[in-house]
Length: 142
Image 1 (cartoon, helix red, strand yellow):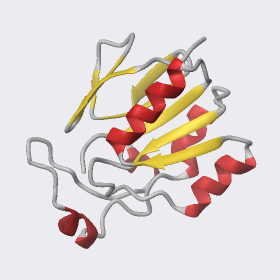
Image 2 (cartoon, helix red, strand yellow):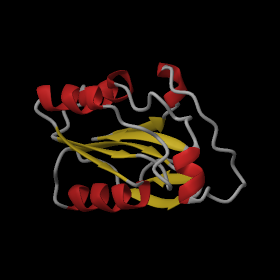
Image 3 (tube, helix red, strand yellow):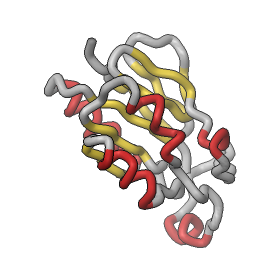
């Protein structure tokens, strides 16, 4: 089973091939996708929809979106047997990815790519096109 492509991305909206749902943040894996709420694992932060992206300076000053993408956030995607996991940190890279998450993935033998979300989607879709079992977690706002 192949991973679905990300069909479109804009501030606060993502569409995944094979799904009629419009996601704000999402998880994707070979054969599926679903909403992703990173607050479930204790990360705090607010990226209001309908507002323009924050400037880089505003993002750097923002201490929210911490502790960030936890191993528990990626575990579901890992269990789907992915070879590579792409993490989209947001349009301004506000969502953090602690070393413990990268270490968790490496111990599982999974290559991890941590990128700004637009770049992450390009990377993810390129890997899908190559037929690689790739998964992803993407934050589509700040």
